[in-house]
Length: 116
Image (cartoon, rainbow, N blue to C red):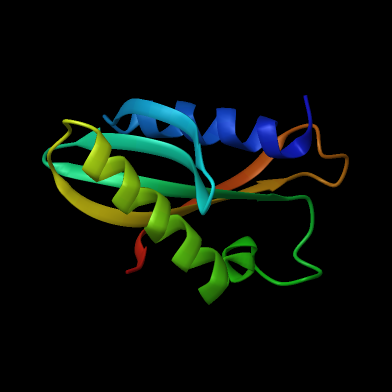
């Protein structure tokens, strides 16, 4: 399992512990991808997961550029239009920071409503 897959599994586990129901993972269309789609108390969270073993290049959330945000929003629109799921959409980012050997989670940061 690569670092990205490891981070996405950790993020899904974290969300479940916080009371979210995971609806879908790795939702892909031509114009974009969503790592996790989760639901909790009327909120339909479209979650981008960024996993890093160092802060050398900045916080993981900083890698979610405007271009990437537009691709996630496009995929979310597609998902909402093609599925019978209701809820207030929200775009979250989960940062997974690993220890220096990239074998253990050092920190999980959930940024709710990170962009729109």
